[in-house]
Structure formats: C-alpha cells, structure tokens
Amino acid sequence: MPWKKSEAMEQREEFVLRALRTENFRALCQEYGISAKTGSKWQERFLRLGLGGMEEESRRPHSHAEQLGEAEVCAIIRLKMAHPRWGPRKIRELYLRQHGAVASESSFKRVLERAGLTEKRRRRRVVVEGGRLSSGRRAQAVNEVWTVDFKGWWKVKEGRCEPLSVRDEYSRYVLELRKLEDGRSQTVQRSFERLFERHGLPEAIRSDNGSPFASVQTLHGLSRLSAWWVALGIDLERGRAGCPQDNAAHERFHRDVSIELEGLGEETQEGLDLWRQEFNYQRPHEALQMRCPGEVDQNSTRSFEGTPQELIYPGMAARQVDKNGSLSWQDQKLFLSRSLAGWTVGLKNSGGQFIEVWFARLLLGHIDQNNLSFLRADIPQKAAREQGFLAAEAA
Image 1 (cartoon, one colour):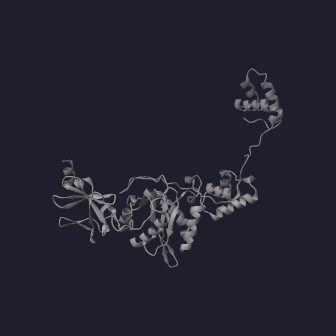
Image 2: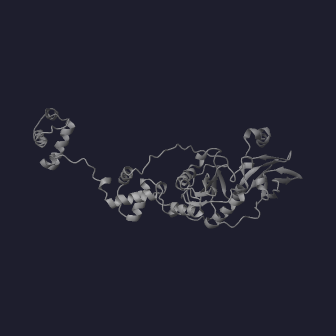
Image 3: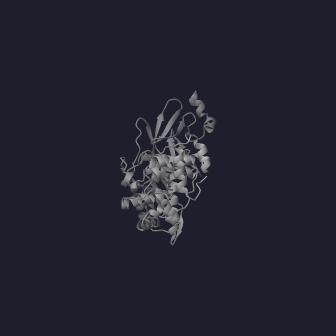
C-alpha cells in the first residue's frame, strides 16, 4: 500500500526512526499501512542518505528521446527519410559515422516511433536443406560462395526491368545489379566474364534450378552457363525447385530491391548502379558488426584467365562431346548432355566393366562396357539397381 498523501514526508521520517528501535518490523509496517518491502526500501534509503532520502525520487528515465535536442531529432528523421527501409540500428550507425557522439539505440527507436517512421518486422521461419549438386555449404570467407538470380521483373516505360543480381554470400557485397537485354546463357555469361575479370573466381556459385542457371531435364541439371562455371573450377550449389528459402539471403536482398527500386519505378542502369553503391558502401549490416559490405569484401585470389580451350585430365583418356551432346566410345554414340557440347570429358578405368566419366571435378556417370550404355550419376539408386549397376559394383 502507498503512504497516505497527507504529511507523507513526516510519516516516513517517523517510520524510519521507530524502525531503528522496533523488535517487530513487520508489525510496524502494518501499523503504517505499508508492505514490508516498502518499509525496507525506506529504511535502506534512510541509512544511506539520511532524512534527505525520504523525498520521492522522480520515475522519469535518466535518458530518453525527449532529452535529445531539436537538431539531433531532425538529423535522425532526415537520415530515416533518406533511407526509409533502414531500421533504428542502421540509422544510429550512420548518425555515428557522420556526427561522432550518438544517443542510445532505444532513443533512436523512440524518435522514429513517435514520428511514425517504423513498422513491425515480419519474421519467417527458414528451413535450410541442400538441393541437387549442393553440399549445404555456407560461406565462411569472402569469395567462398557467390549467389545469383534474376530479380522478378517490374513494369517500366519501355517494357520491363528484370535485373541480374550477384552477391558475395559472406560479405553481402553486391557484385552485380544489371539490366540485361535478355536472359539467354550467352548474355549472362558475358556479364559474368566482366565480373570474373574485376573480382576473380569464387569457389562456388549458388543458384536456383531455373534457366539459364540450370536445366531440370539435363544431366546433373547442367545448363550451358553452369557447365562453363564447372569448366572454370567453380562448384555448383543449388536449391530445391520451388524452395526460395534455400537461397534465403538473396531473396531477402531482392525484397530490398523491390521496395526501394521497383517501388520507385527505377529503370535506368545509372539508378541501379547508384543504389548498389549505397548498399555496398553506406548501408551497415548487423551480421557484419555494423560494417558495410565494401569494408569486408576483397577480390578473389583465383584469377580469371579466360575460358579454357580444352580441359586436361591427368591419368585419364580424353574425349570431346559432339554438338549433339554425345560421346563416342567403341564406335558407339553415348548421349550425355547438349549442355556439354564442345567440351572435353575424362574417362577413368576404375577396374571391372565400368568406366568413370568426368567433367572437370564433376562425376557425370559410368560407361557399362558390357552393353555399351551410359549410366548417369544423378539417377536415383532404385533406377541404378534396375540397370544392374549397383549389383555389379558390389560383386
């Protein structure tokens, strides 16, 4: 119970003085109509501060948004208006970089809330699973994994804009955000050639299973573009068909593009470049301890030396895949994939009736010498048993 309003100060003084001599503290508290907890609080304050401690202390926070000066509040709001999709933490980091001294994150949050400039974040559970040709690798260093996709198109004055986006998974650095004339393999490959010349080669590239990055009907889902990546020594990391959460960080990045560029109807490459520059060198990221991607990113140590004319397979026999995607073996044509047309594959005799077929570091399958057939490495085990392959291997 609270103290009686009348003569509260005198009552507290009387109470603490009697409390020094009483043998039944709880009964004394009951006599004054207060709880033992309240009585203990005032007794402790008297012993620490004397009779002056009997005054009520203000419950107003020591520091809050109202204590910020008008100039500070205006500066915070200006930064938020310039970056409407940034949260209080990012706005505070940007303010710190520009002005040095800075208020607490909670103060920034209160300022933005009172100005009606915040919205509650919706969260989605992310299920992480590997897809085809996927080891489930997550980047632990710069240039370990790049992610790629086409941002869904939006309508512009002269048709539509559907930019190609490429990011470094670890540093979040946007390597490319480019409006291409089309989405054909040759066009995308030219864009990647420019990227590789500037930044070097990544260890792996993560994509979905759509064109031109993959083909659901071909061996290992190889397209002409992804076959070129493999020939350059780049591993493939793929998500499952229809599961964008397998490339969740890239999808989250596309949401920023949707809101900040698509929402404005931006269509020029100059506008895309300016946004990419801001994203890389101005926008702090919590996962990077509030550093910008440009502060973390660096070029790969694996330089791009152009597309190889042919692949070398030490200790293996080499065969070229013809324009129809077939391999010649003992006067027989064994179909592999049209995506491999013009490339060289390696043949390794591992003993027995089966010969391994390799494309760079990727095992394509086996040639069965008994019936001169090609057994794909990406077929299910049940189908492999039906072909007698696993039984023969075990024997």
